[in-house]
Structure formats: C-alpha cells, structure tokens
Image (cartoon, rainbow, N blue to C red; front, side):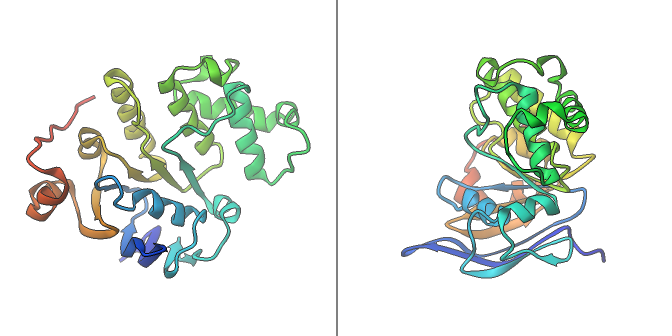
Amino acid sequence: MAEPLLRVENLVRRFGGIVATDNVSLDVAKGELHAIIGPNGAGKTTLISQLTGQLLPHSGSIRLAGRDITRVPAYRRSALGLARSFQITSLLPNFTAADNVALAAQAHDGHSFRFWRDARKVSHLRKAARDALERVGLGDRAGVLVSRLSHGEQRELELAVALATKPQLLLLDEPMAGLGVTESARMVKLLQELRREVSIVLVEHDMDAVFALADRISVLVYGRVIASGPPSEIRANEEVRRAYLGDQHVVVRHV
C-alpha cells in the first residue's frame, strides 16, 4: 500500500488547560481531497496551523511525502510543497492581483524581498503570476488592485497565490467564508478542477460544498477525531449527526 502524502499521528496542542488538538491522527493520500469538519472551537484551524508550522505541537508527528516535518519551520514547509489559505483574506490590498501572485512565486524561489518591484521585473515570475491567475479565472483582473476586487475574487486570488508556490498539498481554511450562493458555486467548481492537479485538505463549514467535493471527511469535535471516512459513511454516522450534523439534510450541489 502506498505511503500517504500526509501522515499525522497523535498530534497534541494545548493552550493552558485547553487541549486544542487531542491525539489527532489522519492520513491524506496523494490526489485526495480530505475535508475536516466540526463545530466552532473544535480545533480545525489549530490543526492546520500545526501542519503549516505556524504552531508546533506539544507531541505527535507530521510526515509529508515520507519526511518528518514536525519541527521543520514554516518557510521550509512551503519550499517542500505546503501552501495555505486563511479564514480571513491575507492579501496585500494596495498591490495588484498580479503583484500578489508574483511575490508568492518570488518567495518560493528563495529570492530576498529587497524591494517588491523586483518581482515585476523578473520574466519567469510574471509568467508564473499570469499562469496562476488564468488557472483560477482571474486572468483579466491581473492589473486590478486587490482592494477593488470583490470578496469572491479575493478568495480566488488567494488560491492563485497558493498555486504560484507549486504546492503538492493545499491547506484551505474556510475558502467559502463570506461567499454568496453564486460565488460559492464558482468556488466549488474551481476546487473540483484543482483537485485533479494537487492534493487538498479542506476545512469548511459549508456542508453542501464538503459533500460535493470530499473523497474522505474527518470530523473533529473538542480536539478529537470522532470519525473519518468517505462522505456516505460520515453522513450515516450517528455519533457525527449528534455531535455536528444534527438533522440537517445535506444535498450535494451539482455544478
């Protein structure tokens, strides 16, 4: 059996007396979209922050493509192929869409940030920015300031920024947050296309999106994984329904 792209074993992170991740273990296969769901405060964002190296676990291990990255700093994890989006957009609002993506490509290349104009002058960085923007449907918005993009376009731009770092694993934290119905449907369609190219860990509250996209789902409650499996198993799991899904009827969105 092939080794998973990502293997998390017994991950523990505490904040004082609060155990944010309580012996969390999960695998993500190459080519898989693995969703992590759970109520607010379940520890989802804390888990993602540990995967990216922004938080270090108190115990447990993280392996990427067979390599132990548990104590590897965040910038080196990015170079190894981890890319993350955030719940709240983390773009440079007074720069253009293309500038934001080119800077991400520049950082991945290991260039210093002597001055941000450098990224505009390097042809392969400009090409990387154009390619990533085209990939998310923002090719015609390259020269627009981020502050003038719609919220949905900013979410798409975050994906372009992540793609510019050439990841093998995308960690997406609430990409649907704040999106309307039309924008959400567009984001789901975009993620369906991207999953053919890159493995994805998706943290999301939009259950329609989760059940339309995920190959497997892990349910996190009070820092513990209470269930993990394909969507059909998660939907039918009584413990999951009691803890999180309740009696809501999940309808798969077709886009």
